[in-house]
Length: 393
Image 1: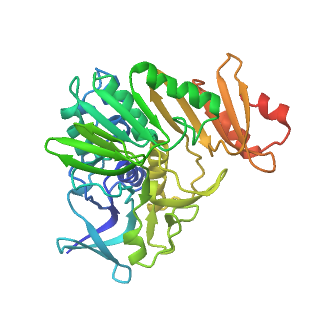
Image 2 (image 1 turned 60 degrees about the vertical axis):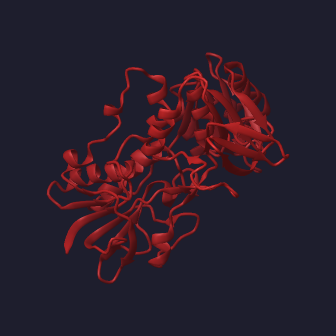
């Protein structure tokens, strides 16, 4: 039986960051990575961003080179099914047992599935394999229906319209982006897509998806049907907590960790999309964005190797579509009171206020270089409106 000083379950960006963080403090301790994926760790945001928009950015720039950089052993297509906390062992679906001294759960999230969808009729876009499948299909004139108007749906709609495909975007909100942005910004955001040629179907959901020969048919909740060459779903995710739950670790909308990213078992850590952690500004939260994966992955590796420093970074999230970029920190909820202002050079800023009038989220629209100011505002939480408006210039 193999035994590692550091064993990582999951093969994404968190695993890469953790292995590199470990090596900063422990150059020789053995590291094992057990990944259910078919590909080594890679830069996931590229799947919906630069690979579509930057001709100079090729697939060779996507892999992170984790084994070479860290000396970690990497087992691909290996699903871990159980943890024996007493024996410090994990077991895979193939029956192999691997021992550990310190264990990291970086199991990520699972995409939400469509109800009443025929097997293989929908691409639940998440992995490199999904990217390659969509890329092969993305020839001029091909018809795509995208269900869901979040990050995945909007970025892929923009990417595919850039490939001269016919794109229909279906989502339940009244306006694209309405779940995050004030109405004025959401309307302008939606116009970017309609102006680019994307057919927008707001206020609709898919009730069934099936095949009719070579055509995929999406039946909407109003009874109308859409024919497509391919259907992509981006309906959000659920944290992959099954392994932690079966091991009786504390779980509450994610694997619960402390400020050093340790679980309720002092020999087991968790990080990334799956981890519910105590953010120093936002309070206990779970964040599913690349900035969090990078920073938390690095921090959890150092923590596993003995660094006593608590994780104190508040991540941001962002998107870039059709020439427009935005960044945000905290909670974007237009049902909250919002304060709309502008930077000194006229870029829109939206500040979301809780019931006490304190800022809990900041949206920066085409306003680069102001993330630190946004974090400082959320940390200090002033209630004076003029002071809040002046804080990000």
